[in-house]
Length: 257
Image (cartoon, rainbow, N blue to C red; front, side, top):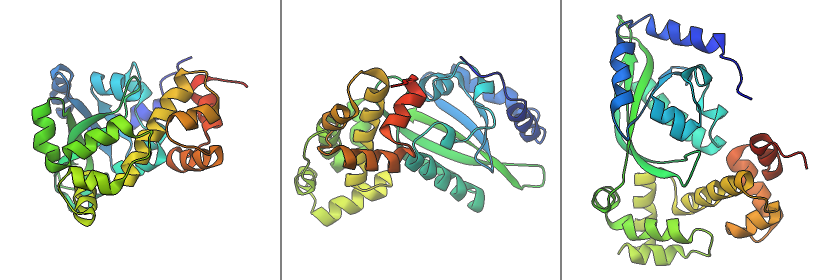
């Protein structure tokens, strides 16, 4: 059952836009840009706006008031939410745009997708930063993937297709035509995570989908995504999402077993 609108969230939004009453009308343009995800946050990382595609595809929500006043920690795995917030703080502290960053964004239905993200500060009449506005567009075609991932493209594709298997980092480096050190440095620079962290994120995201959408046991879910020890799976899952696989399933699927 959907929770009723939060008056607090709406008041947060109204307070934010009181500094720029005309901006909200401009922002509605983003509802008519196919494929583009838009959002705005205040300096406490609380959402004050988002377009319909973002609400539907990323958050699984029907109405804006279900998002207002909440942060990424209310929707995303802890590790990903903290990474989003760290980049937000770069914008808040510098007052400068952070452009063309690559993010792997989870979707409520289907596999996560690659996006190019740009965030820009929002300032009041005295030029004080009061939040940020962000847009993301998907990296979809092979040409776009080659343009952004460059020599890492074969390794990224291999990880996306074989993350549930044993993956050799030295083989990934060889696919990219780089030494292991060069490969790790390039990967971390581009994606803000190591290849091993990316591998873990893909496994956990698959596990999340299986916990919600299948009747597999927790042990079988762990095996299916590449964890051969249930305790290790539980430990990694909890570190990434902030809850155990059992608690995650109960919260998002409503299991009482």
